[in-house]
Length: 292
Image (cartoon, rainbow, N blue to C red; front, side, top):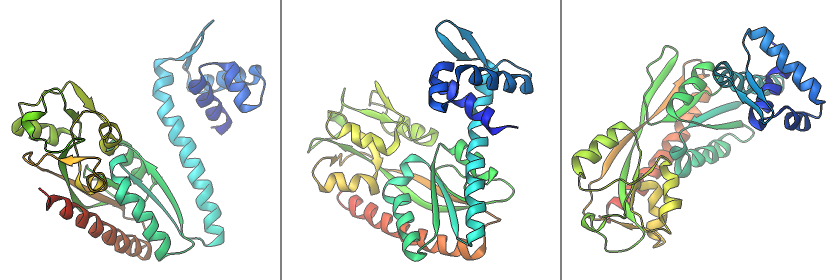
């Protein structure tokens, strides 16, 4: 399949018009139209509904879009790895859920670069299902996730338990004070069951599916929310957030998933540096829990 056709399809899908895509691709609008038509002919389905207001993806187009993104990502990664193979450069691609990058994944990148100067590193972010697709396809070699994966060719190991603590932007707060001032962060089904059992009195008018980024929202707004202790620590120490002392703590297990075909030497270095970073994160967590 011609990668130019796929790239053109994605530009049209993102911009919503053939004219905008032609400007981004530096080709004529007729060339864009011809490429899309060729792709539709190959797939045997129309990918866009055309109208005077622009174009919109058909059902087939929405279905194909995810595959198109994966194809382009895999091509770019293959190109980089072939280039690195010729120079003998060592490379590692890491994926992680958004909330596992701050204070954990980013520190792992630093530790790897320090341990192996010259190593090529690539970072990806996604939800558990996206990470599973990336690691199964080989786009990443290792992933950090709150969801364990049982697949042939993959090895899943416990990473750490993120302790989720309830914090608020004002001091001296108790659970009873949170009426109308609470944001429910969606940490997954296990957390929601815990929340329903332990804190049934808390109304959930505001739901944030933002993970650790929720800290950026609540620290200057009148809302309390659950955050990982390792991440909340800096906000608490700076006096920007405060622990709700009488709130229960939720243990949120995280996992590291390795591809079996990684070289043993690279896996050993990655595991060693990851363990150091996890130990530091657990110290941060313990320090904050001691304040409760």
